[in-house]
Image 1 (spheres, rainbow, N blue to C red):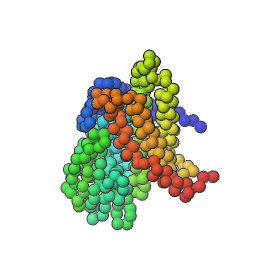
Image 2 (tube, rainbow, N blue to C red):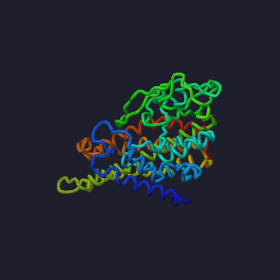
Image 3 (cartoon, helix red, strand yellow):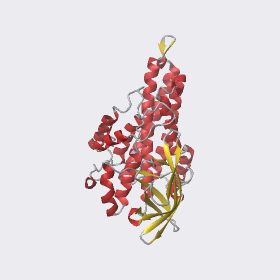
Image 4 (cartoon, rainbow, N blue to C red):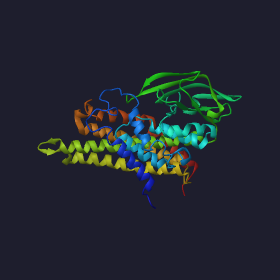
Length: 377
């Protein structure tokens, strides 16, 4: 079996490395690596460079000015973005555009996708539900009245809510159907309240009170929300992988220079063993991510539904990224908590990613249910 990336996927990753190369030189403050507890706002300059490099339209077809690539290509770019903690809604906007392309009306696709690919329109997704623990699709109700849909409910922790032109909101109908709706933050019946994440990023609590959405802005195809949720999840796993790789590199460089008793601490067995364990974590995160991303993007049938592969990737990503940053903090000593050194930002982002993915025990339970329903031969 050939596990190499295609030329197009490798080209996307190479382009991303070129764009992100100048974002945050190590140890130098930048919009990505804020030195304080609270980050700056949306990095519009970086967003423009991503658009110029055609990295905002990876998943769009040529008809809408895109490259027609898959989830693997997007995850390669996201992993590079996480190495510098890029402050752009690359995952959310790309995933939302992919959902519109797959399930939106022709009117919606023709008016939205090309501008989104050029970075002129910013999209995001409300995926945390009312509390961050309940299913997002149950937090908002939707009912149809003529040519409009009426939304009521609350979504918490919406990323980039104050910067987005449209928020994709999952909602449920009285019949139990899940629909995706495009909500304008400034629309009638729509209100945003500021929240701050673990990373210091500004999030939004989205409140909908009889908000009216035109029928053309509603995606009511079966499976639309599930596909979007899977893409968001594997993208988050890719961010965890990229962040973990960078943190392990920082730890390797630091322990190679830090001396104790006349020798670099990297030569001590206890330090080397811990670093090796974290390298193994990253390799497991990598293998499970690419399997889940490939299944998500290709629609290939397997022994388990794609949600099984996604669950395995979430287990390794949430546990692995936590262990990587904890070991990094331990091996850096007190220096790791110094706000003039970027490791504290990576630690905060890692915790946010871990919480976003959810506890590994919950995913193991879900995986167990899938295995019970789909016994392996």
